[in-house]
Image (cartoon, rainbow, N blue to C red; front, top):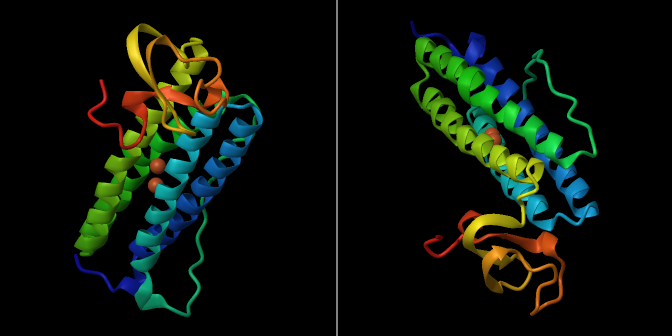
Length: 201
Ligand SMILES: [Fe+2]
Ligand SMILES: [Fe+2]
């Protein structure tokens, strides 16, 4: 059943999604600050990398509201208080929120948009829902490494890249200090988990 956009639930859901993405971007930026304070630079970059993508999601949802330019949209919603200095917990909280968007929120928003006749909006919800699954998986992976004390230790020989200077080390353990730029271990990340890894391992 086609619905007038102005009286649709979809315009509310778009504003909810815009609010959610905007907050996620800030939460991840704050979390990156916590990571940096704890000298976990690579985890900080994982949060920043994701925060930048949440900004793009926010923009995509916001742009769907163009027709209502100049108006206000009143929404309600529940948003998480993800405050802790425990990095593993911050990663787990982020993972939880990403999965909630993927499994529940954006799928429902997509279905509603489809039902109301806004296919383009529905596609944005469905496609971004899939991205949030990857976000959740990535946060979960880093949480697991931290929890198991394996962030810089691997069971098998692997590549480690220093995110500061690009030095690549092959071994079971990331160097404690980068031999090239002398930045500390927190800059190292498994090569296959770094953005732009050439082929990975
Ligand atoms: Fe997002
Ligand atoms: Fe996300």
